[in-house]
Image 1 (cartoon, rainbow, N blue to C red):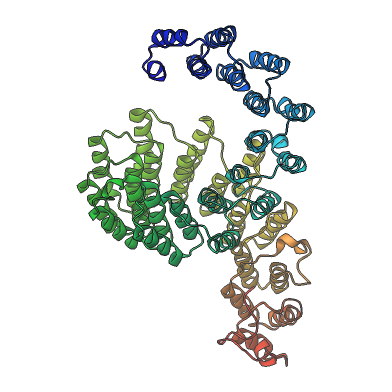
Image 2: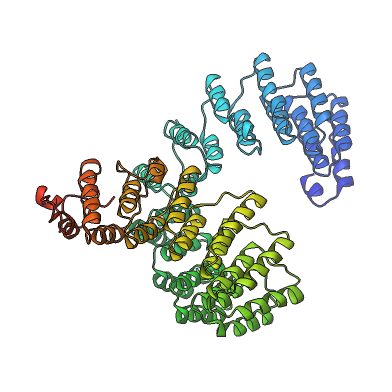
Length: 640
């Protein structure tokens, strides 16, 4: 009968069924077949036929009909059938789980949870399947309020004596990422640690992949140590791939190679995904040569050469491209062609990116010709990459020509990235009018400017010495498009002020940053410090230093936590203090700063020679004279 149904011989199956009118198993098979064909009426007729035959009915038959209602997307009939099942005394945990799943698929979370309460009223014990369906629907919901209920459901699950299992943990893990709340991450990891079941390699893979997505190296390293100290024996290629990927993110290349060699020694055949994880791990840790060598080894292995593909090769291409090693990029490309690897648009875009990064735009025509031969059409990324290359080489006319060609031949329109590249090219070549025309065109096309756009526009106006207009553009576009300028935009505004020797305006811009709680970067402080010293405004330079390092006595508007800049470079600090020491007024301010920073921030390292330069005329002593060095020439203090 199963064979008849699989071959589509429904009439034959029906005749076989009529020969055995009370055969429950055959009737169940027929009901399922009707459900697969979306024939709910047929399924009901089969059930009635069995019932009239006098066969002994059971919950399995009833649940099969309930499954048919759900499979045919007839929620209303499923609910009616459930009532019939309860009346006939045939409802059980499986019935409720089926209806709960149907309610969840229909987006009825409240009704699904109400069914759990109803189960308990009927003296039926919900199980892991019951709660796992609800947990899965909760974490996958687009409604943040629904997602926030997940730990309430887990608690409810535990309260009724159902312990979360590996499936529960896998559901929670698959939804963790870099934006997940710390509490969700910690509770999920605690749940896994307290699980009664032995951790298997499927869950092991889920844990390490979640840690990679979360993006916290400390957590990743801790979990890897915990997991690998257990008795889990990895047998699957997929799990090895997950571990290799995780160790790659943790920068632990020794463990990456250990996993790879163990897999190969045990003759576990890698899949293309496993090889992709390995190649990406090697490349991302700065060894594209090693990754390429590994690909060549696999290419000589009869059991593995068939799994090499364009995605795997592209990791190596991107690695050499980042190193601007054009010769090896072309060598890899030639090898791909010799091995008859099916090339994708990503491959060609990577080759074009190499041309752009290496300023070798003369290689572009040959790549475009190869694309045409392979019948691969350029996409927006293709044009954007070429545009970036033309702008970086200063060939703005070629960039504008390319945009025109893209519109006419490919029927594509520029996106924000392309407009920003054009603006940046105009800024590099000081083409103010062309840049403003690009901005107008961008707005007319309905492409919303971003903070990157603002940053480039400020650079464009700064190079043209149009500082006032730079500020006007930022204010106008920010209000129009509801943008909040970030540290990069403000840094370029400060730079524009410094280039035009407007220290007071630069400081006013820094004050606005503090008002908006935008933390300055090291470049912002370095430029303002240099200009303040050049103009002999030593008190302001002293106030800036104190604000950057969080020392008392800073400029009034810098007395906030977000004024502190952790990345102020030693060179900028040394340059500022040495320059201040060149005049009596400046030397006095620099000496005062050294005294206060010694008291309040003893871990800030300052070059001893700079300290001597400042303090030799004040009777003071350097840190290294007061506190003998235990290091290698840098005194007791450390970098901030």
